[in-house]
Amino acid sequence: MMNEQEAINLLKKKKSPEALVKHSVIVSEVSTALALALKEKGYDIDLELVRVGGLLHDIGRVKAHSVHHGYLGGKLLREIGIDERIARIAERHVGGGISSEEAKKIGLPKGRYIPESLEEKIVCFADKIVEIDHVIPLEKTLDGLREELGYESSAVQRLIKLKDELTRMLNDDPEKIVKKNITKEM
Image 1 (cartoon, rainbow, N blue to C red):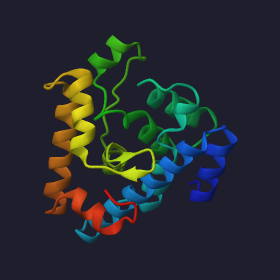
Image 2 (cartoon, helix red, strand yellow):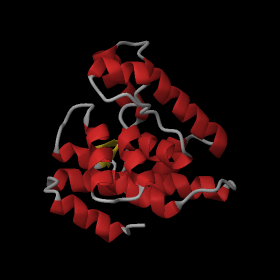
Image 3 (tube, rainbow, N blue to C red):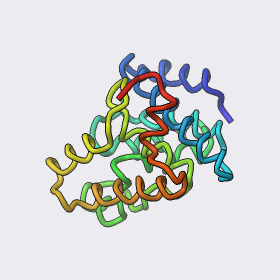
Image 4 (cartoon, rainbow, N blue to C red):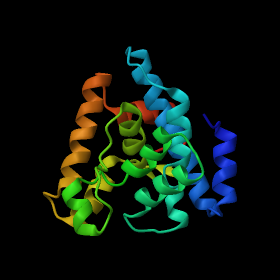
């Protein structure tokens, strides 16, 4: 498994803009805070996978700034021999995930792009509460998605469901846990 510094070096080697590197570092920190809280509740979580997955989740943005960046990031990571679990984090973090029907509509190769593992879900959620280099309320992200995709869009519904799932697992609001543990204030 690649370590954090190797992941940052890979982002820089692939010519990721400094803003993307900063965003990725914050997503990794938020992801780690959530993973540690879940670990304290007894969940089996690979902390290193969450840290590195948080760092590399947006590597596909060096190729595209559309929803395709998740797929392209997973593909890039696989091509250079990075752990499949990290590739899946990159591939499945976009929105609240992309169903196979939605993937077909937007021109992605056949596949399922919805986070499945707990590590994938953590990074997906963390990314939705980090705007560039600071933590924001999930509601702000949801408002943007509602405006872009419609109030009842499946992406909005999946993110609400993801927050609800994390809230049940943590027995607390994941945003409160992040706010308590991360220095970049909401």
